[in-house]
Image (cartoon, rainbow, N blue to C red; front, side):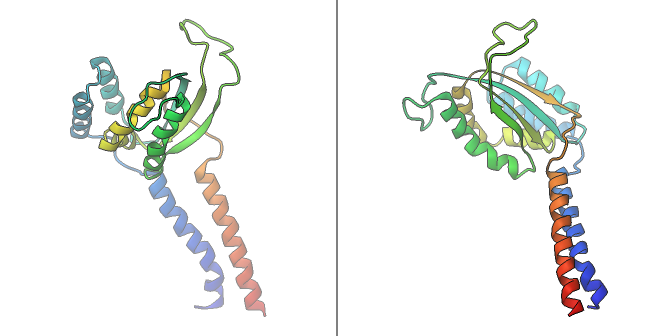
Length: 213
């Protein structure tokens, strides 16, 4: 390998790594097909989801554009949740949610999905219009899904059904709204790009110094 190509190799490696990362992170998958939608909906029907929720889910999947979206969640925890699964008496709603997220976090990350924002409520809602009992919340969170296919694949896993009992036990009430399209300043696309540029620049400089010796 000549010296010029050797010095360029960090940039070529960084470009290749970033291309592979974007292929995985963005997915670039086709929208859900009618057959896929029917199969996923059938699973949710078998699990006893009410007809109105099935109708909303079917519409959401049928309008799939193949791109990512975020789910905005407001959650109010149960103060004394019913013990389910292997929960111990006295565990809080937050404890139950932690058990649920112990399943969800690896399932999300394996599909290029992840939390974007999360935090405890600092006070009751400052402004509420037309919503009864909407002043009190425990926390809010925003989760990025690589696609609607990834979301429904997670939701229809057999393991998800077992983990979902903890989510149901954790919450007194919740609101979850999908948002698409959306905009977030920064994020993994930019963070990974900057890290690769920095690494390639350091490697390039080291190779240049070595070549000058």
